[in-house]
Length: 169
Image 1 (cartoon, one colour):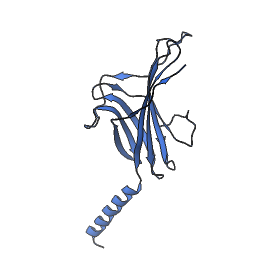
Image 2 (cartoon, helix red, strand yellow):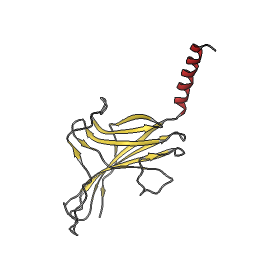
Image 3 (cartoon, helix red, strand yellow):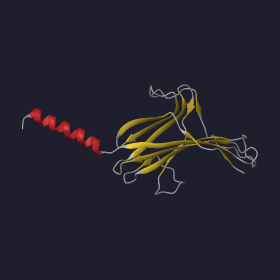
Image 4 (cartoon, rainbow, N blue to C red):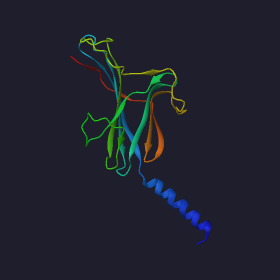
């Protein structure tokens, strides 16, 4: 086989194999404001991004930016999938999992200290300088930086379904 044919076959094979890794798709996004019931308990907003993916694909979330082009924050986040307990903090959905939910939140304490006098941790860290790698298509919402297999990818979430507020007793 000539060298040129070998290069063409290898190129076609590489393109074919890159498509075999699989894909991931955002199925639904939601946001839900919540209010604590006890005086001084604060409130916040919970976000959920529901994703379906190929069984053979591993997904790793690198970071999430929430806000707009000028101001926002890098929230703590977790990946939740049906085979694990909700309380586990993960940043990845491994091969074998076909659906997962990316969860993150804004949490604002109502008072700087709780009734026991312990200082509450800072739950939201605002940034006046947004990441320099925000996509040009992003105005406001969320940007999810992730790896699909080993390929770096960015998802822009501009609109979310707004759920009824939660008012805790």
